[in-house]
Length: 193
Image (cartoon, rainbow, N blue to C red; front, side):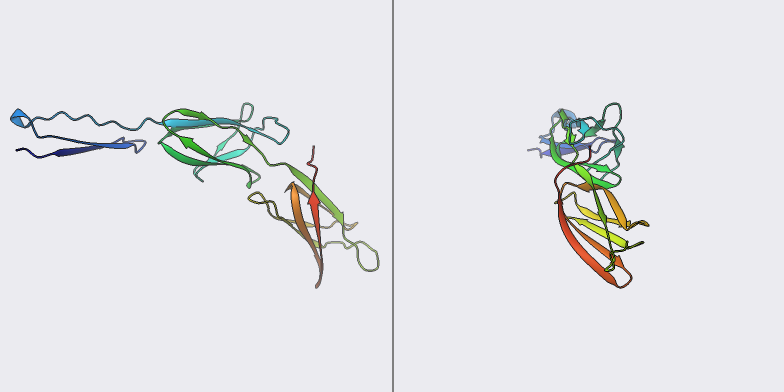
């Protein structure tokens, strides 16, 4: 009685692999085995802003790998993907602005991304004497889940600050001048536009 034979194969460029077993060996030690490698897939899509306008120049990453930049009407594509679930993330000025989980099973999956709406927070910092707090350090912390983060600014000669690209939602602002600081909270409800 002959024994089973197991054969494996791995694609040299994309890493797809397969395995099969068979046996026993036939006359003269011959056995034909067929190994099926997984079909590769792709993810293609368009990045839109919150008003559904296609955006060029957005960095899109797949599982935090090498990025592609949207172009020709916000288009992006990732080709030659092994079957599995992929994390798709879009960044504007190195800040996360959209994300999605995309299953790929040997076909091209169309998945568009919509950037979270952002706006500009502006304010004035005054001294107790009601004069402008010139050169005060501003720290804005966005509380928007996944897309929030910290933004820094400095007040100008009139005590005015402006922080652009803040995700819509709750935020806290702290102004520091010398050893004193003040904190305020707010909600941005309308995006720039």
